[in-house]
Length: 135
Picture (spheres, rainbow, N blue to C red):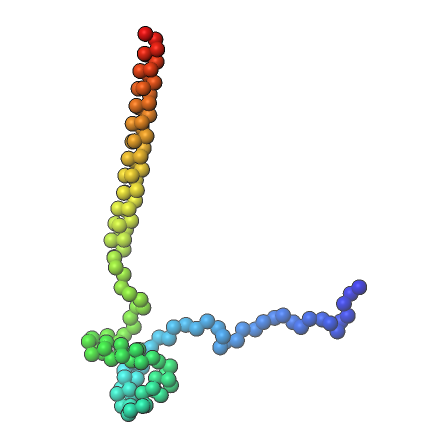
């Protein structure tokens, strides 16, 4: 028996909300960072927190911007790559990979040579035992 029309399901089409879409990392320009540092320097006691909340920044960001500005000037505030610097260059990584591969193959060769030596000894023992039975 078919279901009555009044019990039909609502449409299941979902429309995504732009506010819930995946966020991308903010790209802060040099001018923006310089402006925020200048505003932070002008803040009186207790106003810095309001500035950071308004701009959705952390105090550690402001600290690192100030340090970069003092150490490297305005160019130090330009975009930096996230994460730590790599320990090895691509050439060094490739060289290390080849060393590991070489060590693995050397070990494999040692095992194969050991097996061959055992086979030769076993064959020699069989030949000796056969020669000893004939006399």
